[in-house]
Image: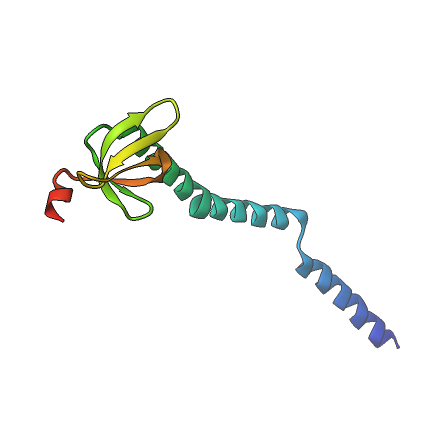
Length: 113
């Protein structure tokens, strides 16, 4: 009988040692927070900053690509309501929100297409 008691006591001590303490939980939370920051938050913040700089740098006669796949030349920029008028060709102009411009293309792109 005493043989079983000592085994049960040894098993309880082993479970307590394998369970870990609160410091181990804090370390794991810090590691997960670091992974979240470097893998998700930081790249997204960088992309947002680059897009904001792109929106501020758009000027008249820039050739742009929209998120819908349209390529055109900026004809007019409305500063008060964030809309841009884009000329697709001599006959067609459209008005879109400035946020939907994804890239400013090099000069002469429209001529080469």
